[in-house]
Length: 402
Image (cartoon, one colour):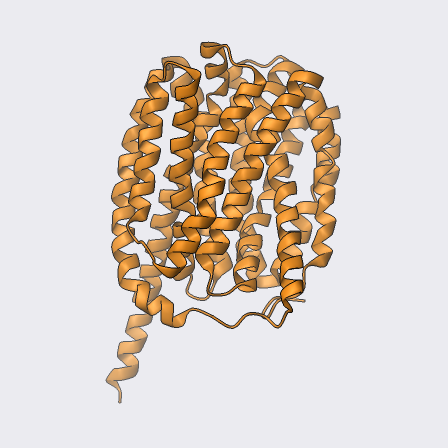
C-alpha cells in the first residue's frame, strides 16, 4: 500500500518533465518551420529587384503560398483525426526543404510560384498535426501548451526578416540554400516527436473529450462564423504588416531596406511575446475575454498608425503586434472546446483559414498599393479591428470564466 502512492508520486514529475520536453521540442520545430517560411516574405524586396516584380506579382506569390497551406490544412486535419500520422511531420518539413532549395536557384517567376507552393504544402502538413501534439502534451492546460507551441512559430517568423537582412540580402538569393540545414535539423527533431506521438495515440484517444458543450447546431455554426470573422480581421491586418510594412517604411520615411526589415523584425518579436501571454491568461480568466481585448483593443492603435512619425510608428506597431497576437491561442483552444474530439480538423481549418486570409489579403492589398499607394493601404486597414465587436456573439463555454 505504501509503494503504490510513492510510485504514482514519482511518476507524476516524470510525466510533467516529459510533457514539457515534448512541448519544448514541438515549439522549437515550430520556430524552425516558421523561420524558414518567413524567409519567403522577408526577401520580397530582393526578389522584386532581381525579377522586376510588381506589387501584384508579390501578392500573387503570397497568395500561392498561403492558399496552398489554406486548402490542404483542413483536409490533413480531418484525415488525421481518423487516422493519426505521427511521422507526417517529417514529410511536411521535407516539402519545405525542397521549396527552399528551389527558391534559392529559381530562374523565373513561375518557379518562384512553385517554390512558394512547396513551402505552403509543408506548412499544411505541419500545423494541424503539431497542434495536436501540443494538446496531447498539455497536461490539462491547453492554453499554456498552445502558447508555448505558438510562441515558437512567432519567434521563428520574427527571426526570418532578421536573418534575411543579415545573410540573404548581403549574400544574394543563392544563400537561401544554406537554410536547408535548419530544415534537416527540424526533420530530426520531428522524427523523435513522431516516436513519442506514436506511443501516445491509444492513451490520447481514450482520454479525449467527446461531449460537446450544450449548444444547438445553429449556435455552434454561428459561433464558428464569429470566430472566422475575428480571424479575418486579425490576419487581413497582419498581412498588411508582414507583406508590405517594409515597403511602407521605405516609401513613407525613406528607410533603407535593412533598416525597414529590422522594424519588421521588432513587430514580429512583439507578436511572439504577445503569444506567450494569450494562452495562459485564457486558462485563467477565460478565452472569450482574451479574444475581446486582443482584437477590438488594438483599434485605437491601428487608427493612429498612418498619421504618426517614425518613432511612434515603431511604438504603435509594437503595441499592435503584442496585443493582437494574444488572440490566436485563445481562438484555437476555444474552437477545440467547441468541437471536442476534432482537434486536427479544427486546427487545420483555423490555421488554413488564417493562411488563406493572409494570402488573399496580400493579393488584394498588393493591387490596392499599386493603384492607390502604399499609405492608403494602412489608412484603410486601420478599421479592420473594429470587426472585433462580433466577439459579443461568442457563448461562454463549459469551464470558461464568465
